[in-house]
Each structure stands twice: as C-alpha cells, then as structure tokens.
Image (tube, rainbow, N blue to C red; front, side, top):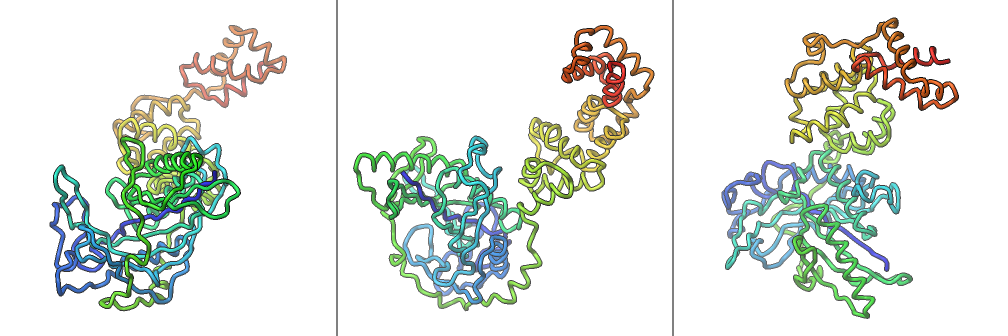
Length: 481
C-alpha cells in the first residue's frame, strides 16, 4: 500500500494584541477576561487589521521561500459553531499572502528511532500556501455542558498547508519538527503545542501499489503534539490498509484522536470548500505588500540549515554536533558565546553537548538558567588545552563550577589542583608501570598499538589523574621502542 499525507499546521503569531482588535494575547489569563465587542462578534463592531501579524506572515513566507502576493485580501468563511461568535471566520481563501514555498527536512528532525533508516535523505516538502486568519474560541467539554473561553478568539493564526508529498508518519514528524524550528528562529510564534500555539490537522489516504488515483482523504483534526501526530498517522495507515485488504470502501471523513486509547474515531463527514460560502470581507481593504516585503527582509534570521553549515566551517565541529547545537536556538547562542574566543571550539562543543547538557538534565534546568556562563566554560576548556589541569581534574572543577557558580581558575587555585607536567616525575611513573606490566609492554613492542592505552591508563591511575596524558603517551613510546 502507498501512503500519502498532507498537513495543515496552525501557528499562533507572536503579537501583543489580537488580529482585528486591541485585546491582549495572553495564555492562561482568567476565562473571558480579554474580550471586546469585536472579538465577541457583537453587532456594529468593525475589525481593524494587526499590521505586525501581516509582517510576521510575510516573514514566515520569506523564510520558507514562498511567493508573496503583491495584493492580498481577507475573506469570510461562513459556518455555525459555538467557538465562532460571528458565525463566520475572517480568513484568506482566494488571495492568500503566501503561495508555494518549502520546508527542508534534516536527519535530526526525524524521531531518534528512525534516524538511521530515513527513506529520502535531505527531502524538501513543498507547500501549497500560507494564509492568515483569526483563531476561534476554546471549548471546554464538561460532564453535562460545554464552556467557551473567548480569550483565544481573534488571536492571529497562520495556516501553513503542505502539498500531499509526505509518505510516512516519520516524515510527518520531521516536517513538523523542522517547521517549528524555523518558526522559533524567526520569532514569529512561541509554537508551544501544549499551550495550543501550534496545532495540526492531518490528511491521509492509502491506496494499493500501482493505483495512480489517491485513496479517500481522511482528516485527523486538532493534533497537539508531534509524537501524537506520528502515532495517529501510524494507526490510520494500519486501519485503512486493513480495511482496503478486506475489500471495504473508505469514505472521506473527519476523525479525532484518542491518545489514551491509541486510536482515531469518527467525528463527521468532511465539508467541502463550497459549504463555507466564502466571499471577500467587505469591512477590510486589500493588502498591498510591496513596501512590507522590503521592510520585513531586514528581519530575516540565519535559518537552521545555514547555521549548521556555518558551525562546521567556522568552528570545525562535526556535522552531527552542528546539527544538535543548531537544533535549539538558545543552545546555539550559548555555544557561539563560549566558542568565539576558544582555542579549540570543538572541545567547547564536546563539553557543552556532554557534561553541561547532562548536568542541566539532572538538575532539571534549561540552558537559559545555566549556572556556568559561556565564558566560564571557555575558561575551563582553555585550562585543559593549556595543560594546566588534566581532563579528569577538569571534570572535578566543572562539578564545583555547576554547584557554586565559581570560575574555573578560582576553583583550581582554591583547591590547589595542578596537572603533573614534570618530565622526570612522569618518566619515573612510566618506568614503574612498564616494570609492573611486562606482557602489555611486550605486546606493544610486538605491534599491538592498543596495549599502549592500557599502559597510559595505569600511569594515570598511579598519578591519581594528575599526569599530563600527552606527555605520558610520548614518554611511554620512547621507553618502549
């Protein structure tokens, strides 16, 4: 069976006020405390466009290589539902702000368990369009009633529509992860799925191999986690495949996702575009974008793909490490601050991705709340590179730095930590280790290079981790050959 998936992603824009009124956008405020006649749809209230929301939409389009319409306008999408107080939604249909575009996928955007078996490396998923609209209210389904919070109604909302060129739940996961990262880089959305700031509708169809016509389109509505999208799509692939293999005919419909049961359920048959009776909103003038595009171009950020490439070239880190560092905007900023004066930026990356991230994870702290500043980490790495302290001693110093916030040099001085770099003392230790371990010594002389690592380890153990590892290796080789 062949699987075809298209995604419709809704992202709340990062504006202070709503799309067509001055009510504040604030998550977690008391229900119905941020409302006015306009966002409540009261008679006589007129909408006024949020200029920043239009700029952020154009910025998103530029980041995703869209064609920006020279003239765009808003339409009314007519339907009755309790969360839409006017009985219509102001959206864009005939002339959206952004058309076409693309979302590039990369290895680290895929689920970890799928990164070694990516079907199409460096895949680019094309977009149909990006349009701007107002969000609806939030419904709370209680035991015997439904409550409506209109605080969310009127929040500026992007709808990003992909072409149906995603072919597995894993690719859908990668698309959402890569798209979310770009939205965060551009500062256009907080994109927090737990807060409903990023939501996704999935369209999926399955058809037999050899059949060119797409199968019935099944929509899964209002997904609010990337992992949930993957699970729901995987369930639908199995469900639709089994139905077709039984000879059952699938019908176009809208389904919901029950995360606890791990399965989808029927909500309703799908409406078509004509059911909404779109027509241009008579209260809003057309948007001419030429001047706005020129203004917004100056706000274009360095995108994740470009940052990954630059990290490899500028700092000499591996492609894999560059991907991890660029995956998180705050982590990338921390790394650059630490690496800009570093003797070996790659060593800074190693400490950041291993010791520092592990310590933050254990402490349950984000990188923004890290007690070790970027310059302090750079100082620690430079002490190791200069041979002042050993790698083992550096780990001891780092633990103290993370706990106390003290500088590395201050801890080294306070505790009297110093790497043993006296050639005579190290030569004596090497002689003792060779005498105590004749077989590994003979094995190395016989061509077994790995035996040298064992002997080095014994010298380090004998010196309690203080000996300079590079000097130990050199002196051992000289004495053995």
